[in-house]
Each structure stands twice: as structure tokens, then as C-alpha cells.
Image 1: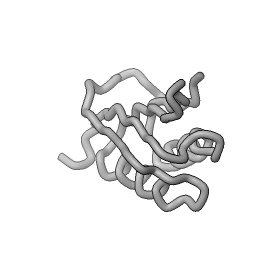
Image 2: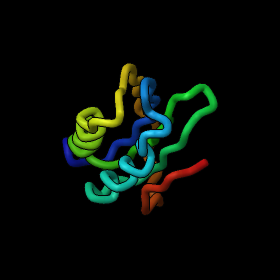
Image 3: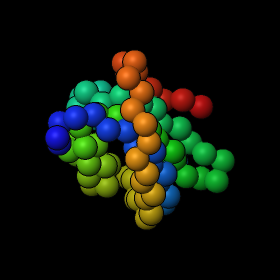
Image 4: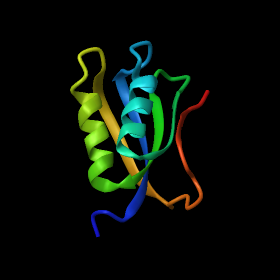
Length: 93
């Protein structure tokens, strides 16, 4: 069902570091009730794990893609197992 929680690992490339990407993602995720984490990677990309209804996961991605400071040139998504006890979304290092 579309409202069942799923979890995705997502890697974003483009202008995604130094533009508030992680903090914007955290704000949106919390507003949408999603859990997971986001972090900068050494290669200039941003990695994220998002958990919640698939519709809300795509809503977060669409919002980030519409941000005027962020420019996502590539994204890689792969479904991974749900973390049943996770309760929040956080920025990690």
C-alpha cells in the first residue's frame, strides 16, 4: 500500500554541498514525518536515507529539486530494509 513505510538510500550529485542542502532536507523531512539521516560525502555528493510513505519521500525530493540554491544533477536511489525503531531525521557528519 502507498502509505506503508519504505526506506531508500539516495545519493545526490550536483551543487549539493555548501548550499544548505542537509538543513533543508532535515526541515522538510520533519515536516513530512519522515525519518532517516543526511550527510555530506568526501566526493562532494550528499548521501541520505529516508523512511516513510513513498509519496512523502518523493515530495521531499521534489521540494529539494525546486530549491533555488540546490542543483541536483544526478540522483541514485535504492530501496533498503526499513528500520522499525527509528524515530527522527537527523543531519550526521
